[in-house]
Length: 434
Image (cartoon, rainbow, N blue to C red; front, side):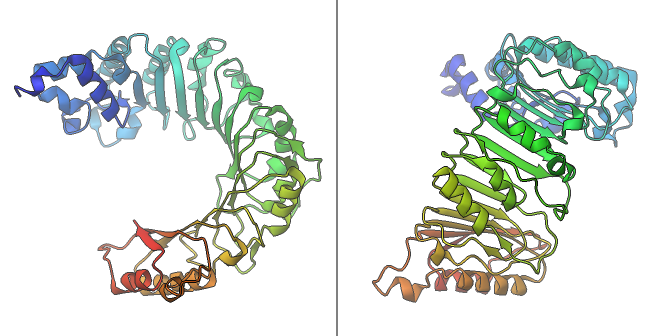
């Protein structure tokens, strides 16, 4: 410890802060269970290290709060003394954080300890002028916790990032209406009936999750788009396995979003709503369960490119269907995430993407490993990934530099098998990642 003890405290605190990967948990009272985790582990090394991490506000400015039903196996989790101790620690952690901007992760499951949770939320709301990021997951407990954060309305001068999961009634819809620094928001479930009011015009990143396709049929999305003046990343998704788009899509004039660079849509027809000259990445999240019908994005993608004069550099698909994109001359990166319950399908012919350099295939492996590898081999062939023989011919047939196969192996004893080695040997551009 002689050399370590000479390290200045200021340097130690910066190192400790960089090593903090997770927020400080308020609801876990048994710190001994976290003694091997950071930052609690450094407090056991020596007095200097303990003083360093206890006295550095940024470490204590990232807090995680959950109701005690999260620890349902703990019989002491519902008594009054347990709640009082959590309140004491929350007050202590807030004091240690000084005036540093707060990063909050609030996850509430139920109303079993409504009084305890209400008091904790009120303590955090009293510091709302310091909130920098706020993540609320209230999907299973209803909207009663929002009563405790109504005090935040109009007092969020430093809030930059908001994430909210859970139903909301009009009474609470304007809590985050005034937040002069808010630029990133993730909201779900979202629809006009919820009455969400955010400073839409200043957002640069927006992620909207809906529980049904009625937000498209009702025109909620189309009405929102003209307000997104500064949006750079926009993502629409659904929190259900299947969405029926048989009702079609409203025909509306394209909305010009001049700064939009990244767009995710649940159906290619939605591209007709946009005019985006800066767009360079498109993500398709497919919610159709008819896997015998191919997913054709060529018409709408080409129309968007022509209308916007944009250059699409990256295409990403999350789908279990066969894909058709046609010829896209500017695409350099392609990602295909095959939905794990349906296996791999024939891949995109990369000869239609003449500038493609990076190709990623994401798939899941179950016990039938041989079948998955056969499907992967077929996908590589259908994509016309250059083989070793073609690469050694001396005649460049593709700009492709690398094919990353990301395997999510759910077998009890995953192994590097002979089939994996054979694939790597045949296609030298392929690398596996797990």
